[in-house]
Image (cartoon, rainbow, N blue to C red):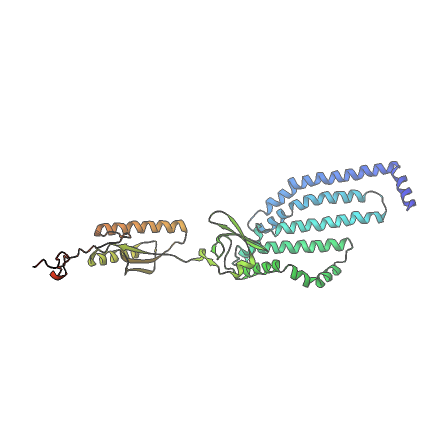
Length: 376
């Protein structure tokens, strides 16, 4: 140890040492300059050449590895500069491991960028294979791929630095049961997310309703699903809960129902009531935005203060704003029909009939005004 230390101090005091340092520094600066040249000209030229429809996947791969390549040139310059120094082979092992670790990290970084859900690579693959990929599946698969890439990278890095990964995995197997009990809620949410992905009761952007929440799905991850309510609040629901609850997916309506009772006054004649029912049905049948599958307009019942006409139909559109526009247009046209027929809409009312009692004759013997002895 003392001999190695003495040899190192003698080398540092030598003029050749400083010349080697200057050469190593020049090599490093050369790599930094080449990195800037590569980024500004060479990489940009290659990227422009591949930015075409036929090579769009290759273009996206290059973009995913752009920043890792820039950082890699710095590590490569440091390693080559260090290699130019005349040092012991035993000392080189640490920089060599650092360089190998940097290569592993750069490759992992690029793969993580490539597996991003915003990457066009997913869209290109499912379009090329003509697959119907649900929008909720892409971010979930992206997170799974990122997790696998990071886990493999950590394992390779551990082996590079001499750690026994097999022993660690065996330890996980022994403690797996205890871990499962401790993290059973997390595992339940994970499997709940998998159930949602497999069964696909909803997708990102769908309007859903459960017993606990109603809104538009914004995201789903390993633990929970995020739903934006109509009050613009973001609700995070555990996947285990939402997978076990009944889910109503309003976005997947093929048509949208309109159902209400129109009450008219009891003074409406039978003929006018029949005419109104017929004309309202014709209105709905001829309306372009009403679905023709089921249209029902019937004199339904005698209500407390009105004669009720049941109106039941579906709109072709399911979009909420367009649905309201169709309802408004039909309501105004129904009002025109009632005005032309002279029929009034009833409102809640109650009629009170007061019956005037007739004067009752009181028998003479029961008349209190007749006192005994008056006849005498």
